[in-house]
Length: 302
Image (cartoon, rainbow, N blue to C red; front, side):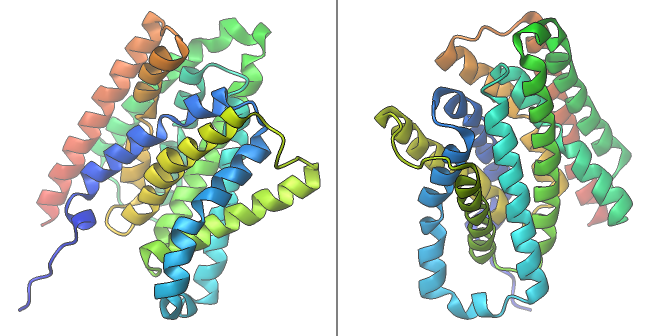
């Protein structure tokens, strides 16, 4: 029997997911620092990021692209539409509320993924891994739940948008996880990002949002946002779906709150409260507990 030789991504996928989470946690920093409207941020982010996958796929993988079924093509575009909705609500959220609260609320998407995985796809998820995810979500609630005192400053609207960003993220992860079972990684990323770019292009026209005329600093930050978050986080997440399920990726994605609090302190001088620090600690404990029990269950299944 010929032994299957694992690729670098397949071999270290769990570690790579964590690094992608770290990259994605900087999204709030970029989003709050860019003065351009959310629609323009998303449009340029996809315009700059799409060629990284479009060119290799159209040159080297046209045959694979042609073999994608109409069903998978449709759901790839649905995933891209959900990603558009996530980006739009997210970039508006970080302009209305503080980074820590926005990231923690947006990180509630594991709940959406869990509900769909268990009740729609009827898949088994162990009680202990679920407890780890719930513990991480509890930590997020500790951080964001105390944002009530800032309602008068308009933070509540930002928090609602951040929560909607979580819902759309969960749907995007779940659909992507299913499509990746049939579609090669880079081809799926290209189709998904293409759909998101089309949504933003239509949005730019519909809202008459100008693409040009913003400060040069904005464009520099958008380039950084594209490289770090679009490619370093979202593209990597989509590639990893071929080797780990949406629950795992989504669970670790909820840990963005910890890195976001650290980055908010470093770059925006947003000093976290004792409650935010407590919540971050609970998130970390929950994720470690989830990871340990997930690994344990996988060993028992083998």
